[in-house]
Amino acid sequence: MKFSSQKALLLFFILVAYTSGAQSYKISGTVKSSDQKPLVAANIIVVETGAGVFCDESGKYELLLPAGKYKLVVSFVGYKPLDQTIEVQGDLTVNFELEPLLNKLDEVLVATSRAPALAITRLPDVVNTYISAGKKNEVIQLDRANVNLAEKSGRQLFAKIPGVFVYDMDGSGNQINISTRGLDPHRSCEYNVRQNGLMTNSDMYGYPASHYSPPMESIQRIELIRGTASLQYGATFGGMINYIVKQPDTTRKINVESIQSAGSYGLFSSFNSLGGKIGKWQYYAYYQKRTSKGYRDNGSSDAQAQYAGVTWQPNNKLSLRAELGRSTYVYQLPGALTDAMFNDNPRQATRSRNYYSPDIYVPGLTFDWQLSPRTHMQWTASGIFGKRNSVMFIGFANVPDVIDTTTHEFKPRQVDIDGFNSHTTELRLTHQYSFGKIKIHWPQACGTSTTPCTAAN
Image (cartoon, rainbow, N blue to C red; front, side, top):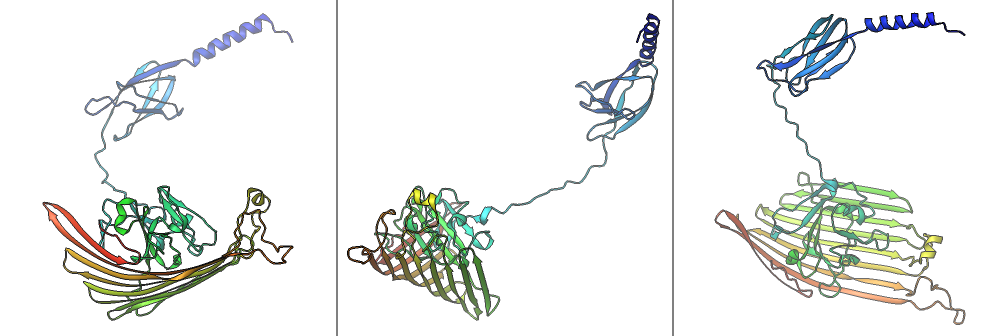
């Protein structure tokens, strides 16, 4: 196709004419307030094209528009928007003056609160006769915590407590094994473990483990006071854990609670409680039974727990509580595994004749007397009675527990029978006095026990 010089010249004149018809003109000006202050970053929008610009630090703006009629809308936060129609035939100067909004909105305060994870709170400075001021502490409210109570999962119970090490010793959920500050978590032996303020440690100065382990369905809250600052509870390095049993519904004479749980690997837990208030007497009792076949072979568990407590409160200053708790279970231990065994089959068992079973009773008597608005006395007497039995073949995981081909008998097992007979009494007196405008609590405690109690602060 030939393109002649005449056609090229014609195209050139057409382009010149078009360009000449699409010529743009400068629209400029300022945007100020009614008191002649420049409105920095005021927005000017051309409605027909959607184009817009912002004013500079002097309140000035510039627009390029071809000839025609346009509507400009000017806006700025806190001022009434303004619109103006202009006709562009050449360069224009258009200034805008915005009026402030006269109607002010009433102040709206939006406030909310977020429940702490796992319902973690803090103890007040003084709890009964115990001083927690200045001591690192946490309170886990189990009635608001979304955790697996039936399996007594320590990893969930203490998941949001910093510095806590949870030792899942056997996976049966029969024991809670925790520690802090790098201490030994085995059966919480570095902590003074209590229930309603009554000690449950088997031996305070020997091997202070706690074999008594109540069901978590029965616990209202867990109080944790950490570090050597909590030595008012004894000579353990970790601190104190206090499991507070649920309180009866004092608005009713009889109140029944029943929790039934079922899960994988044959888990079934049944918790049933009865409580109420009749006159000046309050009572609360429960029975719990939990069975499980376990994740591993030969890892079955059969646990039971019972509790009964009665409180006589003639007035709001005096109360006397008697209680008895029991915790027992029989656990079949599947034995240890080497890394190779675990990689081959993590559910296999290396033992079929190993059993472990504690049976612990914790009776207690608590006398609480508010002598005056500033003086509080509490006396407790309790005991730990029971036994811990175990029958085990002791050997490395790769040593099988099989019948000897020579004697045609199994290899001998180690049998341990431990008895517990511990008595504790503790008297605590707290008095509040003022030193200027500062309120100070003076604590005094003394105790005598077959497992001695040192509770001075």
